[in-house]
Every structure is written in structure tokens, then in C-alpha cells.
Amino acid sequence: MDKRRLIDAHRVALQTALSSLRIGQDAARAGTRVDGTHRPASRGERAAVTSEGYLAQGLNQRIADLEGHLRVLAEVTPTLRKTVANGALVSIEDEQGRRQTLFVVPGGDGTVHDGVALVSSTSPWIRPFLGQGAGEVADVVVGGNRVEIELLEVS
Image (tube, rainbow, N blue to C red; front, side, top):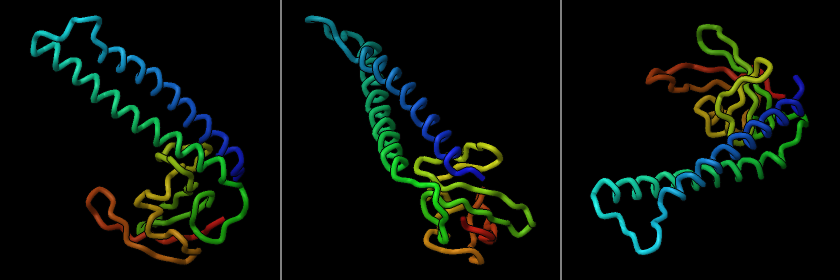
């Protein structure tokens, strides 16, 4: 698997999401502006301005998160890993024999590229294996059910 291509695809996806959020942020900010001496008179007007303010605040946080993911992603190299960390390509298998290949990247959200799911180190599938190598087993809660997962390979 070409890690460099996965990293580049993820960077483009994060940058695209960031651009879209900035457009939404500008629109939300515009909705919070009050012209001149006019102040919202009705409850509806005040609620609309307040809602737009909350939306702008939420978008600010998501933008900051994505900018942080992009900064950390810039430091991820496609080199071989022996333990699970950012930049690790991992193969896992559940107790029913279903296998999955995951690539650990900052801001990974489960998006699939070339048959590989991009996940963050905070993913329930990855978190129990951080710093671990192949052969480890962990219980993961999926949809309220405990599933035993085996870490088959780390590269």
C-alpha cells in the first residue's frame, strides 16, 4: 500500500473540508451582524442572531481542529512502523474473521481510500492498540457490543 498516496489524499480531503467550513463561517458571521443602530426587536430576530453566533463559534472550533490535524499530518512520514501510531498501516481481524486495513492519520474519520479506512489515533478501533505491535488482542465496543479484535500486522 502506498502510504504517501494515502497521506496526500487525506491532506486534500482535510483542506477541502477546511475551505468549505470557512465559507460557512463567513456566512454565519454575516448573520450575526446588526447594521447601524438597528438592534433585533423581536424574539425571532434575537434568536436568529444568537443561533448564527453559536454556529460561527462551532465552525471556529472545527476549523481549529482541522488546522491542527493538518499541522500534525505534515509531520507524518510514510516510513515503516513497528507499533501503532500516526502513520501506521494496520491490519485487524474481529472474532468472526472479518479483516480490515486501517491507516492511522490525524483527523482520520473512517473515509476509505484504495480499500483502506483512514482513522485517527482516538478511534475506538485504534486506541487500545496505541504503542502496541502485531499479535495484540483487545476488546473494542462497537455499537454497544464488545468485540474482540486482533492486531494482525503493523507497517
